[in-house]
Structures are given as structure tokens and as C-alpha cells.
Image (tube, rainbow, N blue to C red; front, side, top):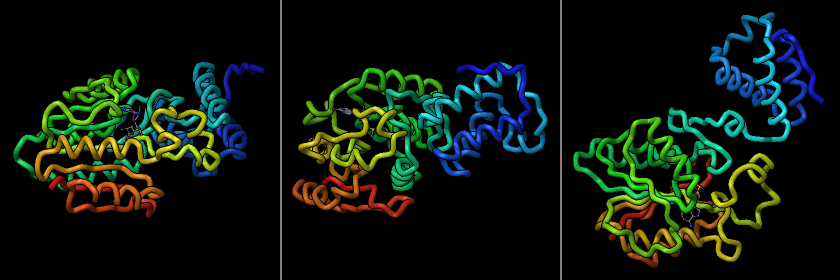
Amino acid sequence: MIVLFLYMLLNEFKNHFTISLSDHYSKSEISAFFRRLTDFYFQWPPTFSVLNPRYKLNQQELHKLFFALNELKKFKPIQYIINECYFYGRKFFVNKEVLIPRPETEELVSWVLNDFDGAKNYMKLLELGTGSGCIAISLAKEHSKFNIEALDVSKTAIEIAIKNAIKHHVEIDFIQKDMAVLDVWNKPVDLIISNPPYIDPRDKSEMLPNVLVYEPHLALFAPKEEPLYFYKKIVTLAQHSLNRNGCLYLEINPKFRENLLGFIKSKTFKDIEVRNDIFGKERMLKAVKS
Ligand SMILES: C[S@@+](CC[C@H](N)C(=O)[O-])C[C@H]1O[C@@H](n2cnc3c(N)ncnc32)[C@H](O)[C@@H]1O
């Protein structure tokens, strides 16, 4: 049923918004959603709704807010409702064809940037499974010495990554390619970075609906029979494509840490290091080509 209001007071709508979502989300999440929506739609500062409780929301404003409210009730991630997310302090376009970038992945980007802070020589960097392009674009924005190529099997993901690169004025070669068919890159590179699909499909029952229903399964899941499938492909590709002392950076699934370490150690890598993410999970790995 569509209810048409000529106008509604801001505090009335905010109450309705909070009550309608209280069975689905925590209080702090609901407040964050409200601030994010009113910033995105109307560019209101966070204090606007507190200082102007009797502001009259007009029909156009109400239409946007009611639409978003209905989508949130269905657990649609807010980033897909407004087609925007933040990564490493920048805004990226996202839609249901690409994964919503995660804060853990920002930590992987930080690791690379810290390692190469102040580097003077140009370096060739390859990203595998770029999605929205958030990793490659953030690295290009933060480090002027990286020459970056980034690939994804999804044509739509590549289009979105290009759109984001244009938005952020960076030059990156985005290539639509299936990493499964690659054994070696077409030229030696100094760095390889990847956050590949790594969720075990057998863990689906533990996943929240906002992820399972809305995010692309191509970006989430490893093949059922072989959870390390992409890692094995990437490590093999890295072994054949990295220059000596070149670095491989991976976001990892803590569940498969031991198996993955075993596989990497069986190849020609040294100085293997695993780091925890902000949530205390073993989430990132670095290995140096011998
Ligand atoms: C976990 S997402 C990472 C996206 C982005 N780099 C990020 O960190 O937010 C994995 C990405 O790998 C891509 N992918 C899946 N299978 C692939 C394949 N066989 N070859 C290349 N890319 C693939 C997906 O389309 C998806 O964009």
C-alpha cells in the first residue's frame, strides 16, 4: 500500500523510521542509516535532524526516504540502495554486480602502502579480482609509483571499476579476464594483490541475509570442492610472474590459513607473514618471491 503524505515533520518520520527498523537492526545502526541517507539525498550535516525536528519533509524528500526504508526492511545493504560506499576515505560507485568493499580490505591496502612508503622507483602491480576497483584505485591515489593493471572475470565489474577510476582521475588498465585460465602474467610484475572469493559455500547457513541475498555470489564463494581454488591459482601465477623479491599480498579466510600456508611454503616464497584484521581474525598474508 502506498501512503501519500503532503508533508511530514522530520521528527515524526525519524520516529517512524526507527520503529519500523527496530526488529531488524540495532539502534546505532538505524541512526547511522538515517544520517547516511539524509547526507546522501539532501547533503544534510549529521546535526540537522537534531536541530530541526519540526522541519517539513516535502513529498519528494519523503518519497526517497520511504523507498530507502522499505529496502532496508528487506535487508538490502544501504550501499546498494544509494549505490555508494566509502573505501579508504573515498566514495565508490557500487551496485549488486560488485562486492561492497570491506574495512578489512582497507587494512590490506594500508599494509602495501606502508611497505612501499617513500619508494622512488616505478613498480608494476597486478590486482586479481578487482570488483569495484577499490583496491587498485586506492593504491593508485595513494602511491604515484604504482603502474597498475587489474582484472576481473565479470564484464560489469570491469565497467564499474573503470567508472570509479574516471571518478577518481587515475589511470589503471582494467582487463576482463578469467584468472582460472592464467598460469603466468604477460610480463613480470613487482607486486600482486588479491582479495579473491574465499567463502566456503558450506558456510552459507551462517551468513546474514544482507550478504547472502544481495551480494554477488561470484565475488563471495570459492568452489565447493576446493575452497583454496583461487588461492592456488593466484600463488601459482605469482610464482611464475613476480620478479625476484616481488611481493604477494592476499586477503585470506582464517579457516583455511594452515592449508594455504602449507601450499605457499611448497612454492618458492620466503618471509611469509600473516596479520590479523581489526576484528582480531587472521585475515591478511604477505609472501615474498625468493
Ligand atoms: C571478494 S571480491 C573482491 C572485490 C574487490 N577487490 C574488493 O576487495 O572489494 C572477488 C572478485 O573476484 C572476481 N572473480 C571471481 N572469479 C574470478 C575469476 N575466475 N577470474 C577473475 N576474477 C574473478 C569477482 O567478480 C569479484 O569481483
